[in-house]
Image (cartoon, rainbow, N blue to C red; front, top):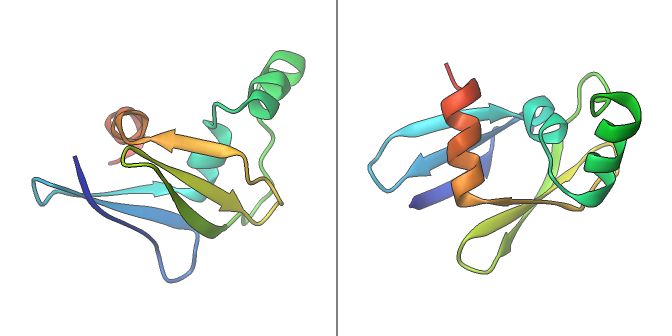
Length: 96
């Protein structure tokens, strides 16, 4: 499904190269706001949205098995795991 994942040189976005050769980009802001870990879900319940600091960046990408990636952010959040299928959903909604 995914050939490569990499943060952009400024770390403000994730570039996904799919097996088809298509390349997609998701901003760190979108990834952080759309995270589905327990902390982010709780924040959505309490505040209606996940509050994202201006200029948020990706600080690390950690492979999770064969089907996902854990993204670490400059705000200290490091619990967001994105299954590759969910990345595809996000690309379909947000990538222009």
